[in-house]
Length: 263
Ligand SMILES: Nc1ncnc2c1ncn2[C@@H]1O[C@H](COP(=O)(O)OP(=O)(O)OP(=O)(O)O)[C@@H](O)[C@H]1O
Figure 1 (cartoon, rainbow, N blue to C red):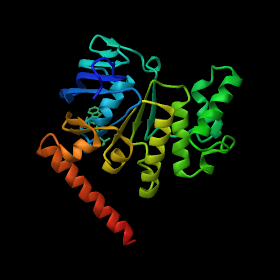
Figure 2: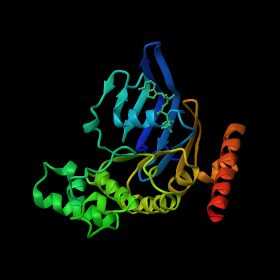
Figure 3: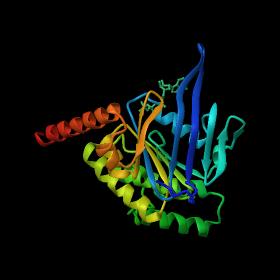
């Protein structure tokens, strides 16, 4: 828990998010609140369609807030009466369909958001980012010359190049094979922790959530059932829904690991 004197980096207060459909307003997320401390990695975990990406898109500024507020470092980013433009939020994004530009080199991809900076400053930042993700010599390569895991590390370098105050990751490893995604999840955690970034990850994969996150939110039907440490989710589930969800997912993980071992 954050101390009462410390402002959380990210605060979601009683969020209500909805889509307009031909049938009228469709409520997707309701009464959704959480605090995330600076430097912490949070994760929203839940079944397909429970509203995880909608929450992330609202934090990025792509969805309006129908009720409640989104605050970053104490400043309001979204409320029903205020909506800061996505490019003014200092929020970086690494989304599953946010692929690298195939016709640009790795260095040009990483520096893409820094195009207006002086060349020397941009080159220095690109080199620092590639160093950080463990690809110091990949700058002149093209994305297709790298493995899937390496491409995702380049995507991470690109998201962090503009030094965002908050990084959003939406299913960033979903296109990778099981071994690579677990390995990369640990690597990404190390990178974010050593650089001190605050981040929120969205996934439906419990192994990824537990590999990466300091705080995990179990979601169902647009509501947050528990927002807690991985330890507490396992040992002090808030209710039988969370207890069953965690146990069921753990069993699926064990089954998948056994099947993988059998080849
Ligand atoms: N543009 C839209 N218009 C209407 N309904 C939408 C729209 N986008 C998403 N939804 C609905 O909102 C609900 C939440 O969607 P969301 O993408 O946030 O879920 P999710 O938990 O991220 O799912 P997944 O893990 O499959 O990506 C779903 O029922 C979805 O069908």
